[in-house]
Length: 308
Image (cartoon, rainbow, N blue to C red; front, side, top):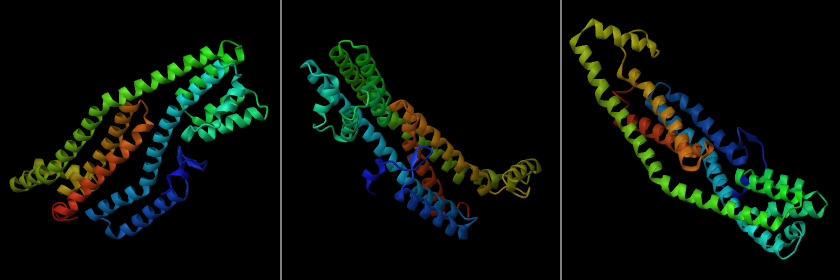
């Protein structure tokens, strides 16, 4: 996959880009799911469905990682961009001319935005309007706040060099705090993954050990009360009202751990980076683990209690 293409403007659905790579992944997933209908009613159906989910969602997962890393690099380079502006303005250069001067320097992924900002100013677009476009294109709350301060102070005609210096100090402090936060929260992220894996193991033990024993015990006892209760549960799970099989009882467990993995990932992202969107990649990993471990274990064990 060419990750550089992900950053280009393209059609988006729910904030995700839709380009050739994503379309191919989704089409392959749909083809696999359609072919998987031949395995309807077997545990292999869910396992292959999990593989289809991985194939269809993997390009979007890569996009989330790429977007997050690129945004971090842009925020880091914005700090360098601001420092260069401070140096030029302190030398007596107007801020508009200072922007034109620094456009030749290398700011990594920020280069296209700096060039666009410089071109807008050279075309006579008001600097405040150009700054607003610059902040909107970058889509970063930290950069947006800094740009708002710079543009407002430039419009008010204050000591722009002092304002720029304050902005540099503020952005530098924010970056330092973010790095400290990511470092301190790392153990909690690892613990979140470990706890979820333990949770999956507990579910598997219930599926393969506890429920078969419970249903077998009710059959051996022949108790009408327990049979009626299990039968009612089997009817609620889509059965015919007869005594529920272990497979019918454990079928909801798969969706239970999938939902648990999705929301656990969102919580991990919120704790580690302060953004729910950042948790989507953790959600993808946990959901994939839940799908493949749960369905794969059933296939390996032998069709979960003797097949469907």
